[in-house]
Length: 119
Image 1 (cartoon, rainbow, N blue to C red):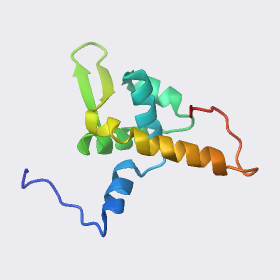
Image 2 (tube, one colour):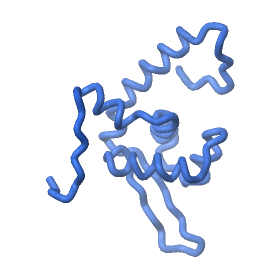
Image 3 (cartoon, rainbow, N blue to C red):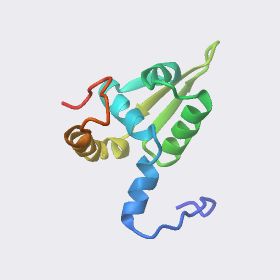
């Protein structure tokens, strides 16, 4: 392991998982990439309603640092950047599906579902 990587101190393994998938949009990004495989920045931004460019950039950088996705830059004008889910990112899909099921079963009258995505 690279000694230059800043270590994050956590209390438990659950905190590691929450750190990796925590953030309002990370689970949505992972879900999109698991379904669509390769997505460009603009496609991800269009998929997630009301996300700012800065927030999306930060979430994607964190996910890349955690090894959940790969970022490929193509030397074109204008530059093209594509994001792809990794095997490590794909390993989180069962957890996200459980979260999806739980959310569906427990949303009650307080929430309105705009775009159902759980199968």
